[in-house]
Image (cartoon, rainbow, N blue to C red; front, side):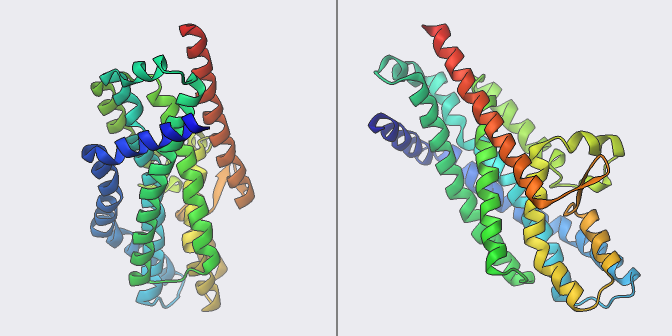
Length: 300
């Protein structure tokens, strides 16, 4: 355990010392918040207002702000928890490029301990950044329309932890095969550009074609996004019901923003979403362990 602790401290210090990796990871959530707030908030606001007014409901600006803010915040956190993990995990690739990985394998450190050191240090770094981003997001919600309870905020933090675990496991599996800066840059670009779409953060899954919806319903990240949506917007929907909004209109909004997910026509409940996300974490973490075991045997 002493060797593992030393590796975690070493990797974490190197990550925060590398200004390029650290600031890239740190500004990603802030840039997304600015972009979402600038370009998408008006679109979401018109969508929510139009759906509610069509149902004959009078909508306050605060309630609309809570709707828009909840969707923006959940989208931002859903993307950041995974993309930041990929940035944090680049130290694994950098060590291969600089030869530090070879030096570490020569030292009396087991391959499994080395792999676990990368995983836990990436998890720690990503959690620090994503918790900071969550704090900024909660401040944004307090400004545009706060409808969260203490339980909602706690559930939101739990969702962030699970998504960071998922993002760390996924990035560990992908970055395991990378050995050059070009490969790392290519993967980072693909993940940054594509993950937000396939997890339903940039565009609600309900707006995709039926075939694509069925494909995306197999991806664990989709359910992580929906969990964030449900906890960020639960108070808003409760307030709508308290104000006498038609339940059909509220359910339609839940469907439109992916609070309600359907697997081949069957509604997926929240406990099932947690099970799918946890299963994804266990699967990718197990795959990462297996790859390191096989790699160690090959070297031996």
